[in-house]
Image (cartoon, rainbow, N blue to C red):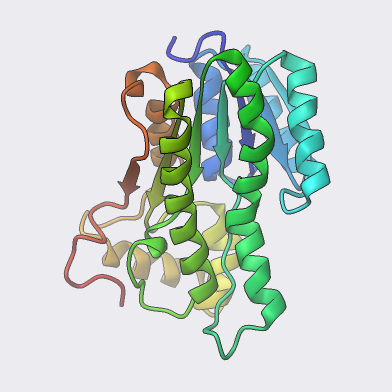
Length: 267
């Protein structure tokens, strides 16, 4: 198995609603490849659902409640993982979310909240996980960014775009710094994905509560004719976390069905 005897800490390892989000899919995919999972989520019930799926398939998963924007809680989370499993081989920084608005519309607190949620959360996890990876002689970090950090996506989410762009460059700088120590860091930039977030949150923000209409619109925007799913992100993360990517670091893997390469882009 590709991750046999590895320990993977995954933030945002639950889903916000029924179905398969990026974190939940990644946790289950990693467990199926032999990793022991430390599933971290703000909502204990969401992490417990992921744990139950992994346990039902014979895998190993422990859960931990954490607000990843809280420095003390993040440190405690890393310490708890090491206390449980003795090491951290893989760190997946999967937490993120958007608040609409430009610089005029966003309050300073909302702007800072976007930076904290999408960027500082990864900084904190890396800050406390990397020393353990150094002592182990290596590790793999995967940051989940967004194509919103690579190009304009047709709406005003300046805080989200800036923080996700920062996450990619943060990962590159980290990758170069720690490459001599055997620690790799890569990013994944998903495009339009059909995860539980679409029905739970985005339908209200952009679809006037009509999830079906929003899904149809988003599918039409993608050159492949449909959105991706959590498993697409999970399989990309699995590659980057595995030894198959042992010579891959400072990379950003776009998973978007061709969207950012298309001339029509977002509508």
